[in-house]
Image (cartoon, rainbow, N blue to C red):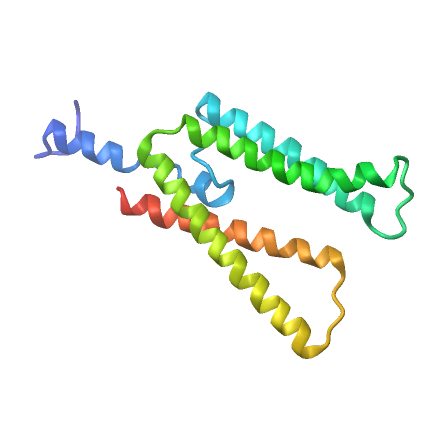
Length: 160
């Protein structure tokens, strides 16, 4: 192997392994990249399910002329959320132990962050007597997912 001067093959291999974590993918998308078939499948599934979620949320908004019965729009929101959970469960089952542990710890962090965000938001809304638009509640899972991405990067860096 051609490496840096004075560096052994083992040191060079260790350095190459250190840079294997796809930090951008972990931070932005929340998984270990689309370089594997499992990552590609997860990306496709979550994109499709989030599109169903977005279309259902818009379909339920006031002033939108609904071409389908309301029950279909109502089923789209929880159905897409359950589908994303299933997609991640399938993905986690395909990971090695370290990657799975990192993902699960990040999910635990995101769950805690989501609970803190919800508790803080409810407290502010109740204390101030505010009326909140239902669509604004979609910001909470987005913020929790951003926290999960940050946790993934932080945890992956611990295992460099």
